[in-house]
Amino acid sequence: MLSHASGENILVELEIAGEKATRTALLQEVQHSPVGGDVLHVDFHAISMDEKIQADVPLEPLGVPTGVKNFGGLLEQNLRVLAIECLPRDLPDKITVDVSELNIGNSIHVRDIKLPSGVIAKVQPELTAFSVMAPVIEEEPVAAEAEAAAAAGPEVITAEEGRRRNGGTRSGRQRRSGCWGEGCACTSRQGWRSGSKRKEQKK
Image (spheres, rainbow, N blue to C red):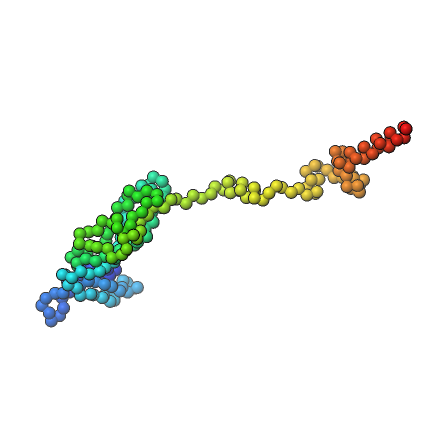
């Protein structure tokens, strides 16, 4: 028994040399060797079967919550052990809690836990023991890229990029005048000025 014991909530009957009667004790701690696992040290706490004791008992969930099974929620266990008080004969090895009815957003508090007969909790009844949380939804990469593009603003095209996209370069005269040729604003202005000069000459 001691080779597998972790040292919690185990009642034993001790036989002490020189005494005829045995003594009831609570196994408190068992220390094992890191090499081989042999028992190195054991602590016992003498108790009376007629006096209540306090102990920390493991809490274990039973079943799969509805919110986990049907909606992909996450079961969160807030209390791993529960502090209790009871007579030695009523001391449980563990306390199981049915969590199968929990939906997303639901919780089980200490006051909701059905304890074995003769066992009372020694912590605040409002403490949360189990709860089911909503699943974490990761943002899709496409939506994230679209939002990043919108945040970056409109595309800015440089003069070099404009020449490359238009498939050509300016002539020497156009470079000197800063003109892009047909369709450019300055070309339109020059055409207007030439027309004005011809009209003046006719007069």
